[in-house]
Length: 87
Image 1: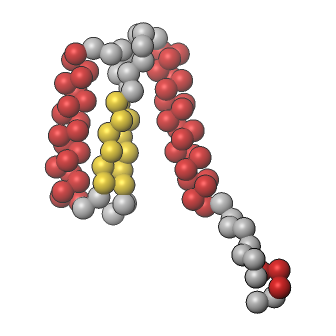
Image 2 (image 1 turned 90 degrees about the vertical axis):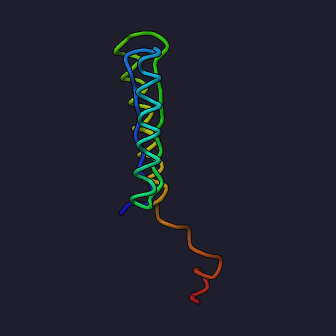
């Protein structure tokens, strides 16, 4: 099982109904975390206005963060100080 799972909630707009959805997602994340033994993170990222372009921008930023973390994790390591001395 993965060490961490991340879910992103991007509702149409900030609204009390979506706040309840967020609460439910966090409650379920706690249950799943205990059952699976994995960290489960729920990010709630409502746009300031009901605009599909803003929702897409939020999703794009989330996707970029994930790609950057993955790229950093798999980037080749710099050789150590002894690497150039043949040790």
